[in-house]
Image 1: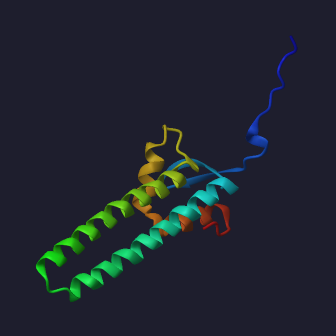
Image 2: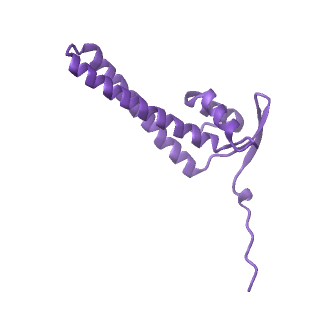
Image 3: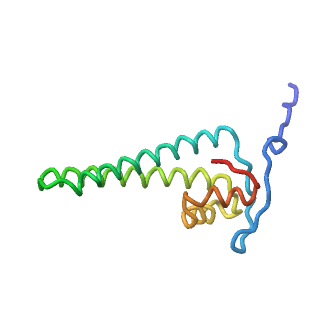
Length: 131
């Protein structure tokens, strides 16, 4: 039987080394699939934020206690969905940062920086906008 061809994907996936807060990371350049995942999640974040603001506006003007309670329930549900979506964004970005320690440090970094700033961090490494 013939030997299988051996291929390494490192020729297709660019990486840069970056020191962030005293720790070294190997940062993978974002690919098209990952970019699409991020775009979808960011669109969801914005929609959930807008829905939450709309419900908060309704809550402020509502006088009926039962209706207020229902609106508060909607706001709480939207907050849970928003937290889940933000966690997915953090996971996607953390997958780009190899901390050499199984990913826990990368996950913490993404959580600490927050989704509003993580793209800026990534852009400082790669020198280009991505999201």
